[in-house]
Length: 310
Image (tube, one colour):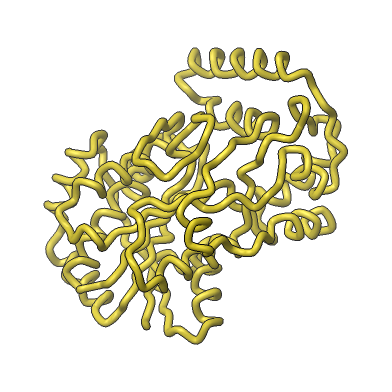
């Protein structure tokens, strides 16, 4: 087999490249082209992708020829980003352009890394096409998912992976989590046993490898499996001793936070959502990976323990 990873020098992409290379599979890394768009609907986005520069498509197709699996790990990974043309271009238009080129190149499987954030505040993350984005970032990711479903390419080509909250060694957000865990603000909504969607980049890389190498059919959407931590155990692993707050008070605070953010045109949605996830976490279905016995080995607990000593 031969793999090509777009965005292979980034946080997730480099983990995927390293994970694939360790198996002995030939893998290359490619910088993604820069795209911009103001398309705000799946239909408009598909239309723009179909009008993409023929020279660009030809170049991308040539790069992908001879590869069995192409992974899109590129894009903007800033949850607090504003919904400008660069964000939409990187997270919404680029995946469609790459999918078109992958189809033309005869690639067996095109894996697009989306985000579980597309389902927003839904009580149970799943692998359905249902999306409930709540921020500019999650809307850009959701727009790509909806548009990929309408793009005229081979039905079996595209697989959408939905990572949850991905942490990694040396990642600023992971180090910030460890610092926060040791602060007086670290807290959970009683009883603190809710599942946390915190996961590790190495487990995500293992998942990408399993999906790309799977010889049978795979579903169109795959959710990254839960790594077994609760909202309390996440903070404890990172070195904290979280306080337990009344769940009723926490829910009231979240409602006030979103109401204030609405007055500011959603500018605080990302911050309020992070607090909500810290308190209440988010449950998820076992999903296809569990059914197939492909659940990656949990690694996030040890990662958080190491982060508190970094």
